[in-house]
Length: 154
Image 1 (cartoon, rainbow, N blue to C red):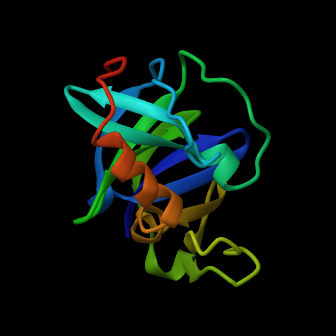
Image 2 (image 1 turned 45 degrees about the horizontal axis):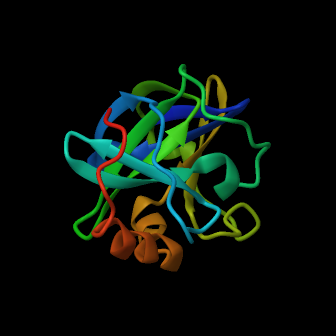
């Protein structure tokens, strides 16, 4: 399984490469009224307005303000496109099948961790992008973004 690795604090995560559209440096976001606390704001990416998911909040990790060294990983499914706010995008890796285990119900309380892989650098929690974009709050945001004015561009 080929994934893009990224870090949030000292935790490693991944998303399947098939869902990754691009990785861009973080820029100031436009605020979004009445959005879920998981949605950090809106990103104008060359005219495409995307909700940005705060991965720290999603996994109940210590929050912090956006930094110029952060990244946005643009991910997509057939239904939707959104961006993930991460500390750093690390590398593309091919995870060996024998190193990957389905996430237990304890690890996947939100249903967003598809599997966990063991690597030389520790555990990697692979996020299920299909489930992430299917969340009700994310769906609500997509309706709102249609009527939003263009915000800061990446």
